[in-house]
Length: 477
Image (cartoon, rainbow, N blue to C red; front, side):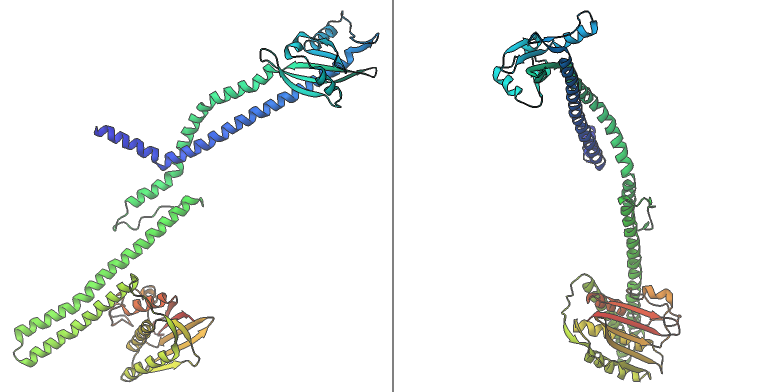
């Protein structure tokens, strides 16, 4: 029973498979074309047979004019009975033949024509008034087909009605027999086409099966898998390119997730370890209230730092999942930027850092004010934090080509080119010991990038070691 079910399942899978559908589509299309070709061929052959019959009858009609002549006031056959060729020709002409005067009086009718049915007086008179001969298809009492040509035959100026018939049963049957033989051979051709279609479908789907097999082997450990392109420029090449692009994005995302997990655990472990160390030291060594208070205060600072990390992570997660909805409204950005520059100028004075603001023109844009202020805070905080004592921070606000441009520049140690593509990633920080090594937790710029993109803008960073750093934000005006 189980074996039968497996066989049934295999057959059902094969029948419903894409390869079978492609093969059937191919076979049905070819079958339709072949049937259409057979029918058209039969019709064309029939028309050609009729045209050939007309030409034969036209020749026979010319022979009638040569052998029918007036004799003593009557139309009679004029030929030499001793001449075998003439005798045979006249005999052939008289096999299916009828002669009458234009009034309808029958002068001669052969047995062959009588089997088709002689013409009535009215029909004879009607045909005698026509300018061109008339061709009709008749059948005798056995059902045999004849083409009959009837019209006016003149001899010495006197008109007569004449009709001559040509048997076409055998020639018409040629088309039917050919069509019958064609359709008897058609199943054999279709079987060959089925095999060819099955093979062609398999060849066509082979690259697709490679994609399927590759997708089945994908795991976190082999995301570097790529399928070589066929370089044919067809749809399968597009599919392979799409698959390889997807694998590149997955590999990049998995690497970011791995690095994020490592950095997040490291960032959280550091304050937790410090908190635990401070509390353990206090429990083992503290003897006075002041010693306990100092340990608790230090632990609270680390708790606060841990809380900031968790809060930033939560905000980023909510933002990226769409839980934070921007409340956009038309805002004049100039006073907002001036206010934040003034706030940070106070803190910058302790490091002897100047913050220079360059803008005089109004710059309106539809922004979420809270998120825009977070963007300003992060950029200004970074600029002040990484600018050396005695340096300066420049802030520019301008409007150009339908965009608002906000630029925050410092003359700090700068950032090496190798770090620039990753500067907006979560927890990405320049390693300690390098010039411009970051002192934060590596989430501020990730928040800035999300805010800019959520407003439909773009952000860019320009930096080089020893030449400072510039962040440029472009928002729709």
